[in-house]
Length: 382
Image: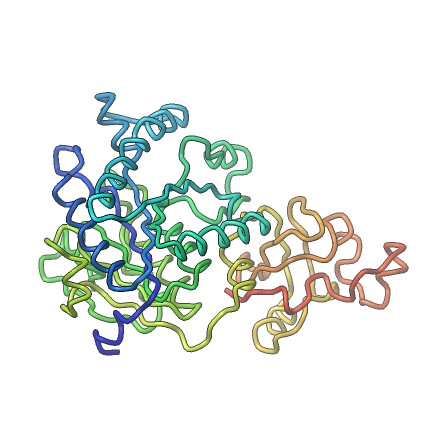
């Protein structure tokens, strides 16, 4: 895809990582942030809709308190509470200088995982954009219960996002954005780690985020919670619904303007030809999950290759507790998650009917809502 075609998008999400917002001394780089604001203002005045996903609140609070470390949930949440106001004031004052209005939106995992909240937030976002407002989004670290939840359920819980890379992808998905730009302190995706291999080459374009591409990721960056792995996961989600993703270096002067001037910066991730519906995106990527259903090879093949519903006869094990209408993870017998879906029966009922024929459900349970544990329209193949 040509660069001129790639950058064509009416609705754009721009994500700023912590390391592009601050200098090496840990203080926020006001000249760089105001350059971002100037570039975004230019895009908005040209008729584009721009949503900003920003990191930096915890880092600003940490610096304001003179702390070297923010270990511990309570301390991190306190730093976020202090830093968020400072961060938002910078964006408000910056956009106000260009006659534009910014709106703060702080999100937690439940805002996506609970379907009614998800739909309500989308309505609010669309109204803000209709009014010409620039939404400024951040994870609500001050009230997030993620760390507490993970402490109790540990590896059995899968959360919809735990960093702003995934949050930006969920926002882009929820709002059908045509382009997600992730600005970090690296030029893009390399064929090897450029910090350890000076001969590593920048990959200019990626057609599909598969296992080979994911294997190129390294760990989290200093000062941030993400890393190339989380950025690639974000790219995988957005390209699956037909969006485009660009990972570029936010420390390049006027990088946003230069991107939209058509310069060959960063790594382009091209959209998939097969687009997921909004509901299937939500099922597959925007929910917190604790319940799991293990299926046999026949059921796995029927779900993936034949677009079938999940019948009780193909289920071999139920893990954890879930209610009717919850989204659960679907695993094969080797423990590999390959799909997610909305269940028609709670975990107790599923345990009673697993391995049974659908005709026997009423005899076993004393009632029958559906022939399938999960109907095909409520299944997303990952």
